[in-house]
Image 1 (cartoon, one colour):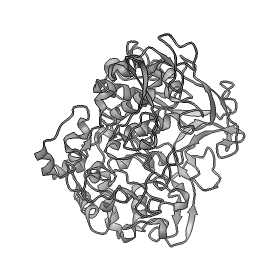
Image 2 (image 1 turned 30 degrees about the vertical axis):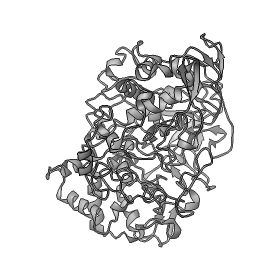
Image 3 (image 1 turned 90 degrees about the horizontal axis):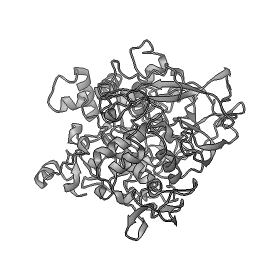
Image 4 (image 1 turned 135 degrees about the vertical axis):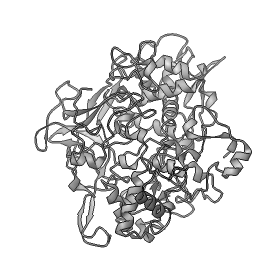
Length: 628
């Protein structure tokens, strides 16, 4: 890693080049020693390499990224945005139709079930302090995120927000009483806030730090994935950008047949669709939105007419990547010289390269989502009144004592999966623990191998020094705003921070080979657990809690389960022939917030389960209906 390319994450747009003296003073990684708890402002991440080759205006790139991230038209159903699973402190706290079977199990789901406090923790023991005590309940399910109904993709219809497709009638777990439900992801949605600090993204790390311009899988993807305009016309070119795992992550869900896409859609088709639509054309954008406000249509939805997706791309990217006049097919082969496409299988260069634009733009937007103004950060920066006595006791326990917390949650980012940790001298690239991936006994290894799996090219996600060392390991999440991002762990099996701390106090739920080093050494008594929970709640940034800039956003209408005519009997969506085999959605409004944020805080997952805040004292209570 070249220290000359390190930048402060909160200033991703205005590059701050460190001097050699400064970098040396702060350590090779440009920050404090990895084991320390430090202010997040001291965390440094490398700027994506060769960005200027593709991007000519980074502010325009952020605007494009925010529009794409929140635009529900990206989904094949015209109703599912990236933000649909990341609308709440960067995560998802919906409670109905969120369950999926974990990989390798055959547990039947309850379909459209609404979660309650009584469902948590998923594995309940007679003695919550002893993982060898009698098991009272063991729900082998995952609290994921509802995506799209399983449908076959036929084509895009230029000018239409919904793709042409057909519902696939299949057996459980995606259907109930003969009707298809929205599919749920088989892992819980992690927060996108502070995700720029991670070397790799997704729970299993499959979003590589190397962006290929097309897939999440880095150097496994050797394709010539973009077209560049040259004197000889459009030429295929390989993209290889380091320090860009957010771009790698962004291009995964948009074509995933569970999360956002009908099965079979490709990037040129998605580009053709989006370039014919008004950005955020079915959603309200606040005129004081911190990024999009000046572009917002004050009299309706979306952005004003002059801010088309084509214009936003042209403003952000170098013309060599969108200005070519030839027409190509989905493989990039030239079909004809400068002319209009005559059918939906012919693409302009700007449509063909849409994956590149999408990934880099969303990475730029998400890179602005840094929550470095928590009370912990204020305390570490010298405000001794920022933490209460109880919270300071929790910080002390977190740092030492019997908690073992900083084995995994280290450095200013509070995760060993960070660039600060990666820059340390003693990191072994073949050791998943050194990379911030750990096995903590959430579930049996056989249920989900995590980093021990393979990518989309059937290449191992990690070649560890020891066979099987990566099996069952998962990325350590950062802890800022953790109060707001329940349910917890990759399976979403804990509803409260108290349950999480109890989980660690009993050294996980599954022992033996399912536990990595250090977890079995945790020792926390009741008083210490109370202290640690209090400390964790001091990690909330009020800008996130009240959705103030840069955490403000356009309006979004999200599905929150399916309507039922009787318990377990979903109503039919008879709005069209395509939906006739599908269950009818229920919808909840996430109102637009401007840069000043909301007057009341976000509701926590536990509060949602218990109905706390439905009196108007919380926002995102999922009680306000809408039509997408």
